[in-house]
Length: 214
Length: 232
Image 1 (cartoon, rainbow over the protein chains, first blue to last red):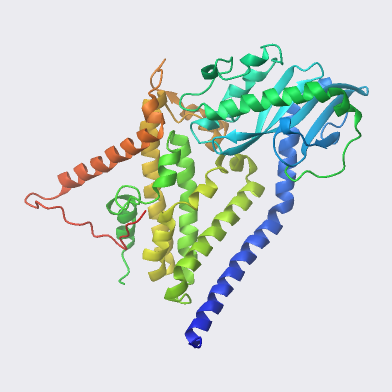
Image 2 (image 1 turned 180 degrees about the horizontal axis):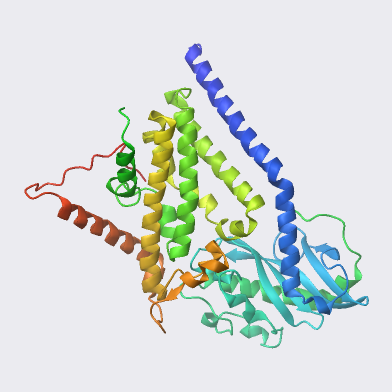
């Protein structure tokens, strides 16, 4: 059967709508790209400042960055590590970690660590946890992440780096255990990574390469 | 199809043909995020904006779309609008995006939007179509907020918790702790609470409708719905 005029017209029309829709999305993407990158960078800077108090360091924290890839940090792509120094001496680092086992997929977080391995703070960068339940890991929704401040591997001991339900010292939420469990595990593994690679982390020169995510 | 009056459109969206209570559409996002008032309100507003825009665009192109491809075109329009809204929010309202970002992609799973495009906007002029989007969006938001209030009160003993996320610091006063030292009722906070709560709201609406019906009308008359659509 030869395609009728109607079929051709309809197909063409659908193509036209697809092209118009793609154009709209592409134009919006193009128009907003720079602002979004700038927003994300500003957000990153603000978060870094929250994690590492400004009086601790005197270098350009956001620029003194390397990209590392390690199973302990989770994620398949290289993740940024920011290094804080004072008078050239290492004082703290901010590691990016990915918790692959969140309830709604991967959770990206920043872990600020003093040179001696004490946690300065933890901030959730992005997550898709259930609103009203698991999303209490997010610092915007509840102060739960502050519970990591001042902790380090060994204090509490490694076997207690779990949520209470699993016999550890960290709280879970009413109705949501999976999200906090994933974050606790990711922080513990990030600290293990830091413990093993601390000297090497501060020795490498900063990377110019851009990470695939902010 | 005759053009309904603005009053009819509003009454349909808010009550007679309410998307959540009568059409039972858009349950996935509705049940997922109504653990608190603020979450419900946030998703409601995002859905409302999408409904008004998608209804308007569908109405504008209604004479050019042939029946065979209409659903594909509507899906395309809705997906493009939602993506554009998400990008624009990320660029211009970044703080709001960080809060609402999770809700925006959820809108795509709301079949109510496609239902309004198909059942109403594709047969009406621009203004009634936009008004229908507004009315349906408001009706949906109202149910989200009511269900959110029920579940937040029973589940946590508060109302409007974290209002500052949506309204800025000025919204903080909205938060009220209704029940002091309340230990929470887990069932209300979890998904079963959403199902039971929605069931109660639907029952309440039916009771009110039955009371309003004049004496003697034994069987419930079907609501004079405009573009009544049932589906998942």
